[in-house]
Every structure is written in C-alpha cells, then in structure tokens.
Length: 432
Ligand code: KE4
Image 1 (cartoon, helix red, strand yellow):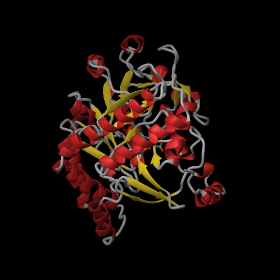
Image 2 (cartoon, protein in one colour; image 1 turned 90 degrees about the vertical axis):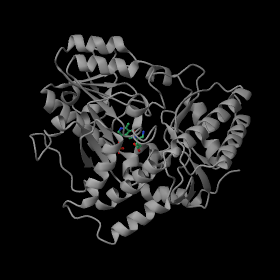
Image 3 (cartoon, helix red, strand yellow; image 1 turned 45 degrees about the vertical axis):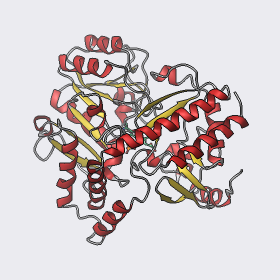
Image 4 (cartoon, helix red, strand yellow; image 1 turned 60 degrees about the vertical axis):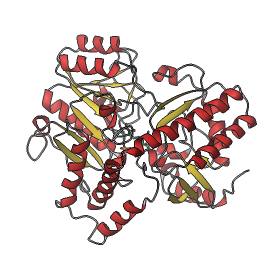
C-alpha cells in the first residue's frame, strides 16, 4: 500500500536548498536504494513516524545507538534533568567519570578512557596515539571496514600489500594515505606479508572485530586470535573498533564475546545513549601519552558533554543491570533473520545472511559473505527493490546492502511477525 509522501518530499526539497543532498550523512539520502527518504518526526520504542504520519518498524536504530529503543523513558528523563542544570560548560563534571567507570567496568583492559563526540574522532585519535606510542608511521585497515571519515582511513582497497593507500575520497592528498595499507579481511597471508614488507614500521592494525560496514560479517574462528598474535609478535598496536559492537554484541563488546584483548578500543553509538559520544581507551601506559599528560594532542569543545554523559550513563547502567537483554535480542533477531531468509527461499530469491546477536544483514547473493569481495557480489538492485517494498509496508531497513541492521530491546514478537509478513509480500511482488 503506497505511503503518503507529500510532506517528506516537501521537506526534502527544502533541505536540499541548504544542506548537500538534503542530508547530514550521505547514506540517509537513499542513493543506494532509490526512492524518497522519509523525514522522521518521532521515535518511540521500536517504531518511527514520518512527517506524513506513516509508521515504521525501525531496524536502523540510529545506526546502532538505540539498543533500548527510541525515547526510552529513563534516557529521556536523564537528559531532561541534566538539561535543567545547563547543557555544556567546557569544564569537568562528575558524570564524565561516572561514564568512564561504566565503560571500564565493561572493558577490563581499558584502564583509561577519553571521551570525544563521534566514532570518527575516536578512531582518528586512537590511530594518532598508536603512532605516538610506537613511533611508527604505517597503519593497516581492512577492505569493507569503515572507521569514520578521517583522511588516512579514506582509502580504496589496495590489491595486496604492494598497493599503498589510494585516496578513496576527493580532497584527500595521496600523501595522507601513503602510510595506510588496506588489506582483505580474513586474509592472513596478506597481513603476514605486510608485516614482512614493513618490518617494525606498522604502528597499528585497526579492525571491526565484527564487521558492520560491508554488511554484517563475523570473524571466522581463529581469525581475531591470528591478528592478535601477529600484532603482538611485531610490537604493533591492535585497535578494536567497537564503535558499533561495543555494548551491542555483548556488554563488553566483541572482545568479551571472542575473549580477545586488543591494545586500544574505540567506542561510540550506544555509549552516548543516542547523543553524540565517541571514546578511545586502553592501558594507562599507552593512554598516558595523551595530552595534557603526554605529547599526543587531542581536544574537543563538547567532549564529555553533560547531557551526552547522562544519556550514556543511564543506558549503560540499564544494560549492566539487565544483561538478560542480550539473550532476548539475540533470540528475537534469530527468529527475524531466519524467518525472512525462509521467505526468500520459498520465493526462490537468492539470499544469504550473517548475524551476531542483534546486528545482522541479509545479502542478496547465494554465496556466503566473508569479505568485501564476496559482499560486493550481492545484487544491490534486488536489495533496493526489497528495501523499497519493505518501506512501503512499514518496515525501515538500513538503506544500503552494505550496512548492518539492528534489533532493540523494544522490538516485539509482533514486530518480528509483521516484518516477516512484509518480506513475504516483497518477494511475492518481485520474485527472483
Ligand atoms: P561516527 O563518526 O559516524 O560517529 O562513527 C564512525 C564509525 C566508526 N567505526 C565504526 C565501526 C562505525 O560503524 C562508524 C559509523 N557507522 C556508520 C554506519 N555504518 C554511521 C552511519 C553514517 O555514516 O551515517
């Protein structure tokens, strides 16, 4: 049943006059899936409403932060009461240490943590810190992993070790990516070769321990252990980018789930409870290089913002006191993902899926997806048709084949039933 879209279209036209593409983050413009992005005016629990009054079951969850659902009462109340005391001081406040205590309680190897205002700032700072600590220049990232938009990380994947970072964005001079190696996820030969070729020159390896940014791709058994071993052997800092997985796949993130100890951890999304927060942390010995204690500079006007700290504290406290949530969202996500996959199979639509807890992706390809090469074989046109049909039927998926979807503690069995029914309808409309 086609949705009314007049108001969203009007708002899109207005926004485009003043904001590039009418959006403040490119993926929201629906370029990858087509159609008109709804302008959201309200979220409550697992649902969103747009400017035309259409209601959606939301599986974006603000790209991860809303693990408790939208407008969770305890989060709203915490923000309101914090706001009544002022919104930002540019001076230390008690809640910064409160949130630090909660983060450190979840990540045992983190002895010191610094709050920033986005995941990009967190990873950019962690890489600078790794370079300062090791006095080395080269960094390794993996194709299909995204760590925010810092220059050194915007590289096209090199074809093997020889190809040093080729800028992946306009405005990034090759000098800014010449020390960035982009290797294939899961390819240990390429990683070993990099360490042989750039002996004692690699400052850090940064990895999404469960990838969300090529769509969801879990680490193969033994992979993270192998990355940990080769970085330890070479005195290279291992950075787990847990901006997405932190407090998502387990209270202690992927490092709890897979029992791996990185050297530095970056965080974001859930730790802000929906407000802008990023963080990077690790052993005191490394973190003591960070200004004002040490020579590695990083700063931020709104770092540790009292409202964001309050929202993060109440969110993490709730998760710490209700860890049963993780089993609940894992089980419900399993029912959802399997139900949609069964509908695809029934309709003869080629589909595979990956899921870790409540983050998941349905890939429109029959073959397993384990890296960017296999992910990129997905039929993005078919995904676009599926996305638009689901949206018309009140289900809001991430608007890209190469993104992870998220289920929250607010999603109900009825949401799951309705989503599977919408998928059946979508596959009936556009069979394979
Ligand atoms: P932000 O700067 O967007 O807060 O965080 C960057 C970042 C870092 N690390 C990981 C693993 C991330 O997933 C992200 C950002 N995630 C995307 C979703 N794929 C944010 C959505 C967007 O760009 O609009």
